[in-house]
Image (cartoon, rainbow, N blue to C red; front, side, top):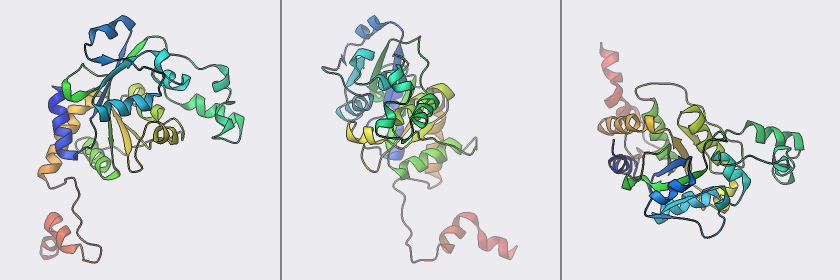
Length: 256
């Protein structure tokens, strides 16, 4: 599968406002030099800021733990471990949680890419076939994500469960998708909205690359069945019976 074709398909069926982003992790920092158009951050930025630069500016960004503004950002990517100030709950209990133990539990339960293997990362728009990604990241509104869920379920139904640890949505999207190898959708957190410029109507989903082609094929099948974005509104004061009957054949069942 060419990621440029996959991106065009996703943009066609979901009409995305920003580029799907590929995340690639590198064991050798020197491998960053193999990517001609890669830019290194000029100052320390958060992971969500870098994702926004890629999905809106159309840039390829790469770096190491030293390029990230917080130890939490680096730990989600498996590039560093957290110190006791974080793991004890002291940091998070200063703002987000009343009890220090709850804050420690929150840190412990977050899913992160395992530490010890990777030393660098690259983020790039998948529209240019930049590399074979370890994850694909997509941002969209609730209606677009609803159709994405329909496509995930279409040929292999399961009740989908998504998580939110509150503040650190990158762990719910990136960490979970990487570790569990399942699509992972979550609500961008306060930090991602304040620093990463995620919009009020946006949700984020992480997709393991092995599921991406199937999801696109299912979006196309649903499109052919009339399940499309934007979702046409039938009207809040009109009986839905005729529309439902045309699809499900309610009246035929009554006469049979």
